[in-house]
Length: 484
Ligand code: UD1
Ligand code: CA
Image (cartoon, rainbow, N blue to C red; front, side, top):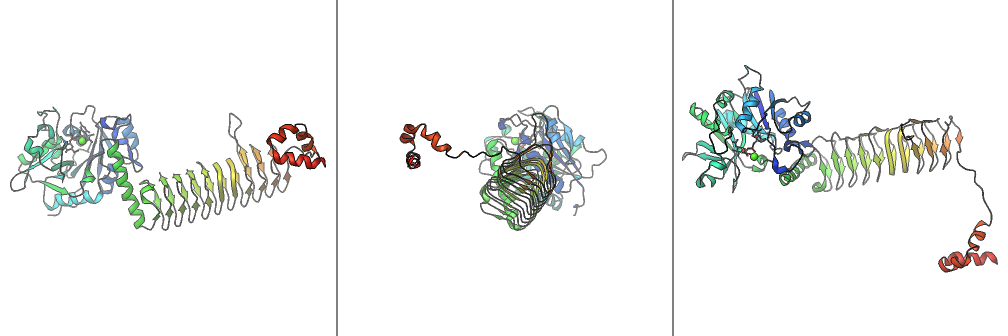
């Protein structure tokens, strides 16, 4: 029997508070490897080709819904958390009426490790077995806290018994309910019959099993080996474990695809990052958000890149911080550089140590090798920005733009007071405070004229000869020689 063409709807239960997280943030919004946990569930649902994805929200509903905006998920509010059975009904009510032809997959919002392949297998098994209700289960030495799977002598799944209601023998059962199920289109109407006559007074979704059996329908369990996948992150320890597992998974995939990681354990690549071939990442590199590295990019140790786009062959040296910047092919950045949002570098640009850029467009082959601040500025090709150059873009209230042409030479320690225009091929003398525009091809010198006072040192130090003898022996000798 092949029902593989049946549509799939996914209901993600995510209304619970998650008190063990000890957090102001709703549990399912805690990020793991760059995505809120619940977004991992939505992502895997999408990858399964789900027709509708419904997220049941309650605690922090507004925040959760905002975080998932744009994912195509629809939302069902569960105002009071009356149990998983009630949450399921809320979710099912958000499915369009008259579309009960689908399989329904139930997921939680706190199981970011659940893999697409595992769910595909679960659904395939559901179809192979012509099952009406298939439970994803696993076996652990101690299943405390979970619902236990109770089978009869022939191995048929009879019941799920919750911890609170379990007898000592039932508690000894090692097969646990993951809370992930595939069910046929009858589930929403059957779930209407779930009651709350249990020690917790909650509506248990697990009661669906008995309701299906009451219909004479087939119930199956699909046992997975990798139980880690379904262990939810309930507290910060679980969160950290999930982070490590996902990091390992993401890094492994990148290495298989042709990325060199010098130290995978310390390299953190968020799930949203894209890497080309022959990218090399040194130890301690962190890549976040919509970062994209083209082929042959190298990122030096302990650099942090967020929403950064690096074209082919770019080299970022150690301890650089890049955010919201686009770096042209063949450019090199750092060590200790900071590219801030709105930075766009052309090809072959050189940014050296302790250079900060913000909202800066640097054309091809611009060089800013040392200690500069370049803010709200446009710089033409082949311009050389000397060490210590400051583009003073802020007047205390407003920011102003500066335009520097191509082939310009800015001497060291110049200050360009915005708004300013420096023409092509102009020179700015070192140490200038440039407060007037500089025309094309001109030299601007804007600094005090040098005075040179011969013999000044001898007079100065000579006036305190005793102190100099006591503290500065070399200078004392020099003073003696000057007398002779
Ligand atoms: C549930 C299962 C248990 C299983 C375990 C796996 C039931 C009755 N029991 O137990 O058999 O072993 O999951 O983790 O289903 N939620 C809502 N609204 C509610 C209640 C819960 O949205 O009113 C959501 C929670 O946010 C969470 C999920 O449902 O994501 C599971 O809720 P939780 O309270 O953790 O279920 P358990 O009692 O642990
Ligand atoms: Ca739980």
